[in-house]
Image (cartoon, rainbow, N blue to C red; front, side, top):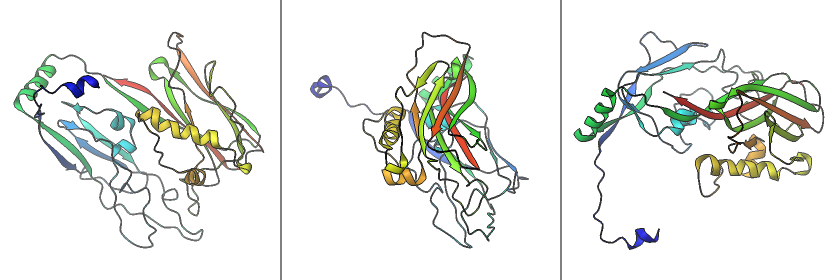
Length: 320
């Protein structure tokens, strides 16, 4: 840093590699319908750039309550797909296609009274994509890269969601989530429980329940995270360790110097709680064909009926 402060003789550098960035709008195929269980495809067959990080505003997560009214929202793909969040470079000479599959009903999309059955009618879906226009020098450089026919690898962190429906009414549970390869190592695991909310319009499916959870352990073969037991007790407000793990996630995942969580402690209890386990540091010297991902969790009392466990695994992925 000192060398930068004392460097007063350097000439200013102007970055003119990119001439212009234009955002183009793409529509689904002409015969596409937006009904229940329909598959919606939006193709792109040009040179494109994916989106950057944006604040969680105007994404449709907190639409004001409406009765019979129109609404619209714009969702950046970096809040839905790990590739769009991690990969910050242009993608050239590749066909793009966004595939959306609509659910079979709207029960998990709205919150209404038990005697109401609101319906969402989709009128239009569009995909807005930034296009990068380069100057002649850099355009020629990219064309030479294409002519060389060498493979271009794309590394990013992928998100996989797993669901364990209808847990048994016991206090201790062991869940074998998946068997992963060494190339797709788990880096973060987010665990949550939910009781009696799925497919019930009168319940908010975006909220989770504590179910009197006391401890959670993540096992990657014989390695386990975290090292100490959590000793949670929500009845006596003993969840500080859980919120601390949530705080540190943003700092380690995004490389931020400060922890600026999206949820306060009150909001964390209202919409959570979420168990965020950081397993990004692993012993690379241990080689194994597969890595068994297993979660063991314990509750103070038997798990209530109609309880579902969710596990979001964030792991490495490389595409060529």
